[in-house]
Length: 443
Image (spheres, rainbow, N blue to C red):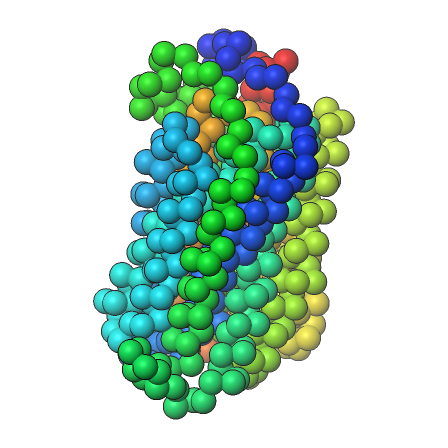
């Protein structure tokens, strides 16, 4: 049962509101840059499915494991101890170490000659990127007051959408400009076009990592002695089970639907509508740039307005509604015969895709300040396992084992996306009432 509002709260959990300065927005800008780099490294595989599967001799399902489940499991498992560190050590240094790790992981993927080496690279990429969300959420939430937090979080995590757009551009460039026979480079030897792309995207992270040490390390709220117990975050979850289960798992299914779409949408246009890789990459990249990026910012603005107007469950209710809108439009896009009409129907879906910033802001608002890093890591673990872990793989299960036809990618996406979106909506709506009570406990 959820604990009644106000019980178990201490003065240390109701901090003075931070003062927003230019350095606060500089922090947002720097994290935007690193979200961009992280998502280029993570999402570029979505545009290289067929070249990679041919080169490594693997199936759609094997590819989906590397792109989804293996990545998500390491991402999630690494996130929990990283979240514990984020609550106690320098957030800048933790994220900086992660940037180096994920850049090396991307390079290993690019140099892989077999499936095992490719998996090792994805594991390094996942472990490194697991530092970014808890480190950035904790840092930014200590520099903005709750009523103004959704917008900077949305701006920061819009880097993920911009990174996905850049991934499409880079993939298209690599497959267009690098000869189909590949290149032979000193030391590295023969590289296929997809390998050239992977190695190229590994370089900027190493070069730009020092920028993290230009952002402030905001003061933390003092922790009571009980905070030394490593299970305190789980005690908080047990205190409000309906909120944390509904919010975490709800966004997990929201993420599952959208990761399935993001992972396989270029392949849908290639296989179902007969487009080239370059044409599909351009179209999906345009969707990211023209819909997902502005949509992320507009969602942050709307939810901040709702919250400032007294809607204390704004973050949960907004995405409960958004999931139903997405399910309707996406289902129609998979069923129409025209690829251009499908693209038009996907615009509202893409407008509502990026939940990470606004959803994360809701968690930061209700979470005790001393537990933000750990609760963010658990949140990240749940929605990563369901999203990045299951989303790509469940679609591949349908193409490989249910329909047994890779050309049925549209049907596979329709089933997996719609199911996940409806479950997400129900769970997020179920968390709203407790979210309101938790806000009352801080009043």
